[in-house]
Length: 180
Image (spheres, rainbow, N blue to C red):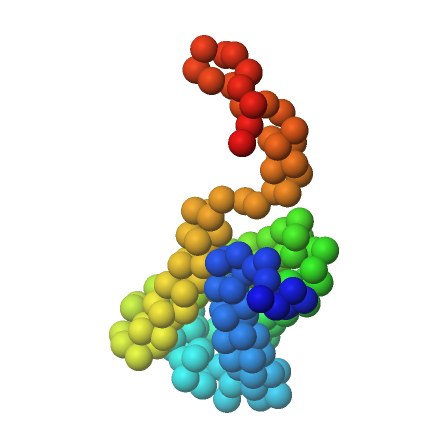
């Protein structure tokens, strides 16, 4: 057995969150930077085509308002990628990982990412973009799967394990029995 292994005390939600972050951080950051460099061309790229078509077809925004909407989409994607990147940094610190200090960053990233993917999926369905619909549905399912794992997984608490070892176990009748 390896004693000083980095992933020795990782939980399933940690591993799943890391895999998710390794997808979302580079993918959504690149898309956001494409929008920042060239807002209209980046907005009409494949990952954003549903939002772009909805903005141009249904909202009838002017060109400057379309650029502002593109920048807001880039900001939202960068925010999600930032929370996932913060989660990756926090998960590598053993003290933070043992007390589950990474949960907030992962939860916020999952929540905002799910909201953005769900909205993009609805817009893709509205404008009839089937490939964009599949992309956003896949991203949403990945995010929701990690959120469900976090909800179902029982929290590990070393403090309660030491307290339960020192307190004798009680039977149904309430008499104290020595613990094994």
